[in-house]
Image (cartoon, rainbow, N blue to C red; front, side):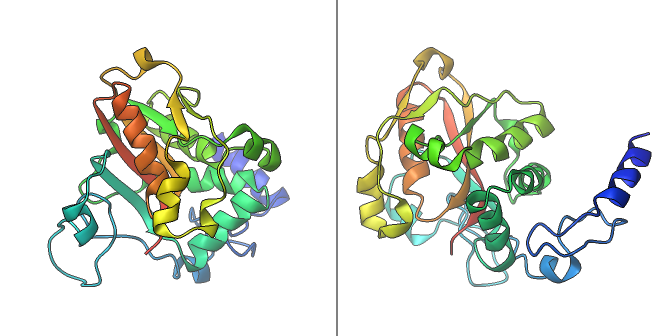
Length: 240
């Protein structure tokens, strides 16, 4: 029955590529057209065992990058589906800045089903999306991280708590700042609303893009301070 209903829906609303908007062959399950899919740069080993940044070499073992080897992080591991460039960047921008929330649902499904190097979503006990400040939420109308996290939680039958982590301070958009300024910008911007709900949880923190990691590092610090046993980070894309 589901196949029949999907077939009828495809006749009325032909599936379109989530990046370019062109029609996609309804027989294929891929949400990208063939041309766009060929330009999605998936992240694979070798990569940093902690922050997940891919190395230039095509062969070799995963190991710590220079930053992770010399600095402390409050998350144990971070992984992303692909590089924040080309087609994946276009799809994220259509979702995030043009209000195409249905694209976000599809991107969340991709996150949920992707096979990550040395990382399993089912090893965690709670999904927590990175929160937006209420002012930004009013401007955008939705939190992109919640939409992504909901699909991950649904696929793996894990609880999602979007209220336990709060962004209490308005900060300037990170995109306009350098690496050092980003860290200072978000310091103290987050708080946990109920420490008891964090106690001994293995938290999977979900966001759309990992750029310098300043936001997720600060979120992880606050979550660990509030009693979380472990924090890992999952994003759709990784700036390289």
